[in-house]
Amino acid sequence: MITTFGTTYKRLREAKNITMQKAANQIVSKSFLSRFERNLTNISFAKLYALLLNINVSVAEFIFIDNVYHHRHQAFYFDDTKDYLDQITKLTHQQLINDYFKKWQENQSTYNYFNYLKQKHLTRTEHLTPTEIHEVSNFLFNIETWTHYEIRLYMSTMDVFPAPTVYALTKQLLHNGEITLNVDWNHQADFTYILLKSALLASYQHDLEDAVYFSDQVAQTIDNEQYLYEKTELHFIHGLIYLQKNKTALGNQTINEVFSIFKQLDSPNLLRLYQQRLKKFQAWQH
Image (cartoon, rainbow, N blue to C red; front, side, top):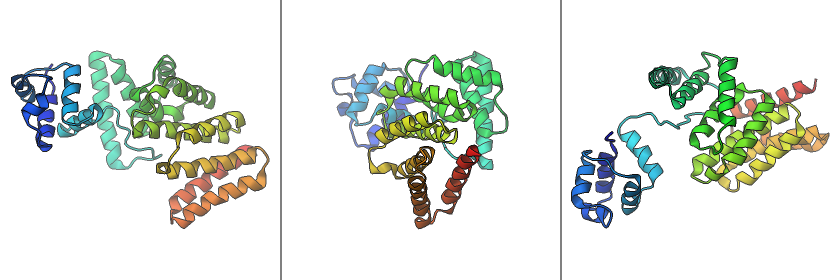
């Protein structure tokens, strides 16, 4: 199957003012590169990788740009971590549900089936059935090396699982996905999101050991100031942990520090969200 990689490569090469001769240097002939750039021939991954090095473009960037140029949905794109979707986004997700369901019916591929379940859950218009939830967890538990696909599938569906399953899957992610942690910033952000959500869940459930474990893992992951919001959320979770340890004064002080940050930054929605989180934590105690 001929891809669109050739025309995308040409656009990038020309945008960088790199001649065909320089781009092809010691990799392929100029005539072969010309055919490739007109989408008349395929190319091996090894040669494409070498050609990309000659124009200073990474493979990840190239695939992303190729999809953008040709108006294709990003297979691993997780557009939001909000707990709601606006109407336009819902319509987009519904189109994706229909598309993945149709593709799954046509070829019965696991990839399309779990994308269908993921999108169905994200719209909140349909609940995943117990059988579907079991299929997702069983699939993830049987993956030895988690890559972008498995991480995003878990991110999208982790709130359907009971707490013990979340703890187990997150620990499996740490063990089986660590190799991909430093692929790019998005991978690190995904890890951080999952760890924070797991730590928060453990705090709600008053599962102190797991709350401490996941919060410690977060602290090791967010090692620079790019993660200021995540550090604020972690500080809040630390406050909940102090309360669980009966360090009431320290816990209240820590949580009030988070509230103060949101007040200072004029972020009433975040302040309200975290006040609700505190109430949820307190409700479990009663």
